[in-house]
Amino acid sequence: MGLYTSLAPVYDEFTGDVDYKKTADFYESVFKARSVSVKTVLDLACGTGSMTAELASRGYELIGTDMSAEMLAVAAEKLDSESFAIKPMLLCQPMEELDLYGTVDAAVCCLDGLNYVAPELLDEVFHRLMLFIRPGGVFIFDINTPEKLRGLDGQAFLDETDDAYCVWRAEYDAENKAVFYGMDIFRLGADGKWTRDFEEHIEYAHEPEMLKVRLEKAGFTDVAITGDLTGKPPEAGESRIYIAAMRH
Image (cartoon, rainbow, N blue to C red):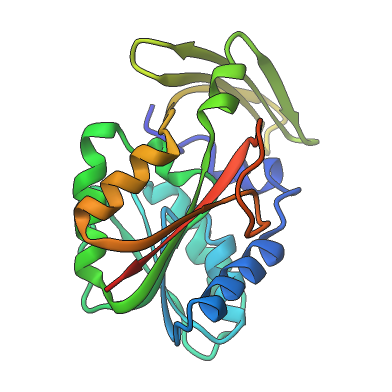
């Protein structure tokens, strides 16, 4: 079963508590603080397009990319249901194969999308972003911290709606510095019968300082690591942090 295949139709139901508006406000505060004039934005690993839609509603020209065709199908339906000054473009691409038609002023990646990138692919991802973010542009992303991922080891969780539920278990692999999620996804069909699918997801425990080194190696500068939507240095035990870097 492919990544985000069975999960795609119910992803938005299971993530209804995500405050995309607050995150978009944070992005705009970074644009302003770094004096970046932003018109075009790349939403990397855009998933079902909720952040794409939020930013497009604020007047930005959006390109959303994701490796899951199923997630993009949900995004396309969502974006078609709304009216934007410029309709967002969606491309089915893994991050390490990013290939745009031109450059963008800013790139964002929300909800720990970078945690899904294996360490050996990070350099290529950052290299690709250097190619497609214009000089003077900015890249902003967030990650689940290594502390959070290690703490998930052995934990089991349940997400539930009226017609779907997902049981997922986390197992941390210390040798590979990665957490494996086994997800059983149950959905109620129109015929009144339940179906069951299984997906396995992997998130890598990237150390923030390692990411800073990799970004600088790729050519990014002014790399700042901050707490969860605070703009201030991370506190001990922070579960999510944000990283912003300039493309000079």
